[in-house]
Image (cartoon, rainbow, N blue to C red; front, side, top):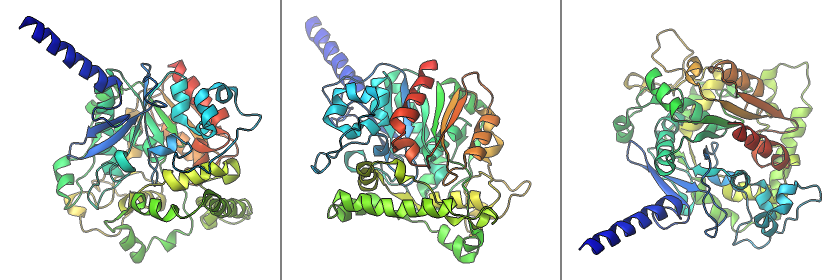
Length: 450
């Protein structure tokens, strides 16, 4: 009997070890599942190059993707089923990439932030918001009225809790664009009534708690933002700021790119995808550069949408991002960014939040006592050390405005740092040609300093 009990305890210990340090708790390599307070499964990937490698035991780093992306954007690679990828590293590639056997087998891995941080000893976790992801890593869908608030107040806390539970350590949290925005909202102690969100009839107000903020900051080692999102630049506001524009923004619809793109793009070779992407975004960049300096900024449409400098991005990476890195989103996500850009850059909860606003179609300007939660009013609740890498372009994220919001707004810390990468737009801060030599090392050096 004693021997049987001892054997049972050993088996339990082995199973727990495999669940925490092996290929995920459900048999899918690297997959972990976080349960949100409203009952959805958020899919996460704990990174390692393959099951022949161990997970890192170092500092955990949790990253979430930007809007219209999934977490694959952090792990650029050659798809196994697409044998036309034969990118060769240039002669001036960084030495770390030349020395790594994984990158030698797949040169595109040079643009994988997840892999670079793994090489530097960090335990990298990637999360997909509700409604996003591919295959085994597709998170559950939310209701059609899902917004940025829901992603940040329900999905992000679930993922942080999962990382802490598995590793027993304080993670550095952040992500790219919207993923970073959710991290700084999490650190403000924001919540939503999960039962109301689950019912789907309307969304409740966002609430912020100084007590919860202090608790969360104490359970996190730092904030990491890659071009963290906030109030974007807009042009020709009157084209959106009207009854029809707000009606469209109020639609409760999910755009399921994860279901559509694999089918459509399976018929298109990489050279066509990359070529079309190149033409579109180089045209935008050229038009933005040609914008007359004497004209008012509200007319600079191309400057406002200059979100990807493809001149700073390899063609195979462009194809990967369009083919695999793009993901679903909800109209409510876009609507919230539009509200912030149209209404004097006030970062607030969705204008339809709260039972009293459930039928409101047009967002109104900020008024005293309007009942909305304003994120930009509570940045001082963030007390952990913070680091951000900003793009030079104003498209998607205005680096001057956002660096001021974050670093002048938060409670100061000796390890706070931020940088602007010359020649970059929003997306190529993460996946551009300069990322392996500028962005990645700067991020890891800051993590080392903690």
